[in-house]
Amino acid sequence: MKQALATEPDVCAIEAPGARLEVLKWGCRSNPVLLLLHGKEAHAGWWRMLAPLLSTQFRVVAPSWSGMGSSEWRKAYSLSAFAREILAVLDSEGPLTRAFVAGHSFGGYPALCAARLWPERFLGVCTLDSPLDPAVGWTGPPPRGIAGHTYETQDAAAERFRFSPADRPVPRPVADRIARSSLRQVAGGWQWHFDPTLWQRFHADVPVSLDVGAVPLALVRGAQSSLVTDDLWSVMISAAPAGTWFASIPEAGHHVIIDQPRAVASEIIRWIREIK
Image (cartoon, rainbow, N blue to C red; front, side, top):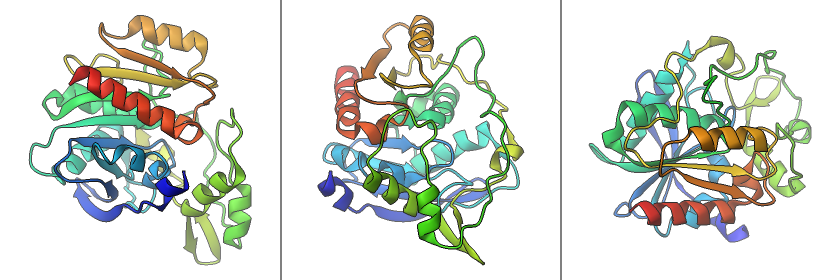
């Protein structure tokens, strides 16, 4: 894993409608594009352990959503705006680029929406522990207070970092690395690197569904996830389109891309080989 973390991506900024986005890229431009979409309040750097494992076979592209990471903040956020960000990132690889896409947690929802709206741009969509009850859909995260606390030092902030949900133990060096990459220096100290009012100004303006038409679909979860529970997993399997690929990653919780990056990378490769 140290070798993967030592593999530095190309870092660039691209223009999406209404916001400039931070984008990390690994691998050769001639390879098939694999777009990796992170979860809520995370950033593209969360893929640093997994992306290099895929970059020998794919052109791996990972943006930070607007309002997260080093991407610009918006006055208002919506699911459709996040879906359009996906198209902007694809266009940064070339006009009409088609891609495979894998989205972790929240990242799976804009991916599903974009594949349904613009199927001609997608070779396949994979959700990674994205909890979705088809009867309910997804309208946004549970309400909570504004997370705008300022810490005096980076060390103090990193010490307070916790995975949510904390359904699996994460080695402290891994958690510390992610914590420190998730902070920004401000007047008076350090804050988490996302818009603290994002979800107060978010609108789920398009429905989220497992129906992505003819686009191949994969549903992957952590076998010990506290969000995609066994009961919800059964519901998702029953509601998924015929031909959907299913995988449950052992010894992994909700943060499956952190818990078992090698197993996730292997599953993505197996799925893509199956549908190509």
